[in-house]
Image (cartoon, rainbow, N blue to C red; front, top):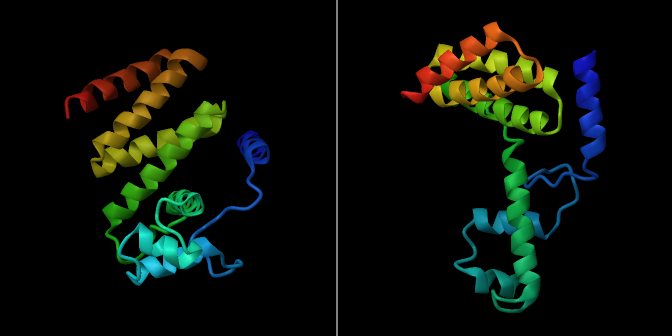
Length: 172
């Protein structure tokens, strides 16, 4: 329950009124969606063409630059909502993306003071990273766990394991 409460607390503090996900067919379409569709169809060869289409100006216009910047931000946001559980990916690829997503979430949780949830997820990630040979993720998880066990909840046995893992992964 403590984990859920921590998660709910961070989400309620940081909630977003509306998440802009490019290509979401269940919401009202806007210029970003139109920009996305046109780029998919390779209808613009440069910024000037796109700006002319949307605003009747050149690619240096303020309105076009704002659209372009917002569109890029929406695309970056959308990356976190891509479903990597597709059957087109090998098991190792799915595990890679799962570890990437979970360790990134743990970094955010840790920065926001949600340690218990982060530690539980990181321990699971560490085991999975070692099992699949993803030393980069094993290192990241060990580093974050080391910070936790070294500063927040000192645990000599856990620290010894984490330090050993960090030494091993440093050599890869």
